[in-house]
Length: 364
Image (cartoon, rainbow, N blue to C red; front, side, top):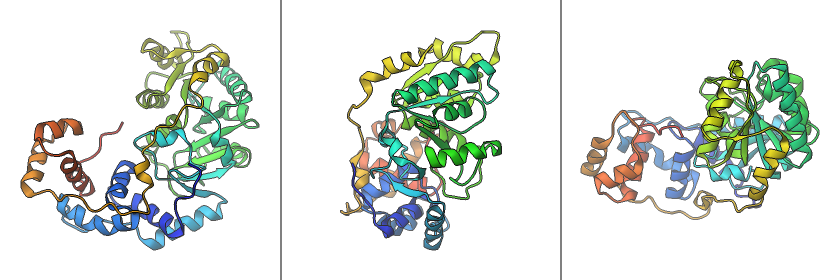
């Protein structure tokens, strides 16, 4: 894209909208597309949530808090970059749950490089760490950005080996939250020589739910995800699964059946991941994909033109859709087919119900 989308007020309003109650990245995009701007969407939130069944006023992120967040980002010498702006990771714009805003610190120009994720066990073996360093160094020297999560073990080894050539650390909490604490020096080095990436605002303390959200960003930024060592219940397998669902390549390094840290990688290989024994294997697989056209949803860019509020569903239409929902996830296409209502009506009702907290979007 290469163009600046937002002025200061619009950036603040985007931050207020994505930080408001029950608004996630997909809901954010639907609101922008429907109302034309974040400021208009913020005005519409109370009525939408009320129609969805929320009995109290929806919590809207205060303007003063958003201004404070932006000031903290700037004080950290970081930048709040919007979806579609030049520094926003290009491949990440393809995924449905792309964050509207990212906090970036460091050499953001590195994000224009083709990226590969290297992830794996926190309690990695010495051989696993050595091989991760070898892969990361060779891929970085070949012009790839190495992306990982700053965790212990494989993540740390990958960042260290690619620090001088190009590495990006995706953080689960705020961009000022260093985890694990022993990686403080590495964190600061990446902030100077590489690039730090966070979806959460500064000061956000880590919670368990932040890690799967972080993993979707690691996978989404990259053409492929490479798992070096991972147990069968490893978070690295979550990253690999997300990468596969996003249509990205999944690579795995085989290991001994006697080593529990190889169980996850061997399962990935059984399930169709590409076996990797060298950086050359990764480069060979990814070379045809580099430079392909990015498939993005341009509708999210509409801050200039108001789109209108759309159709307001009747009570009977809302009841009909509610009757088709269940505790188990239901595909939107199935709701459209079974209700025989227009897709715009179904989407509008689901948006209202989600803002009211009566339905939840199933994780990808």
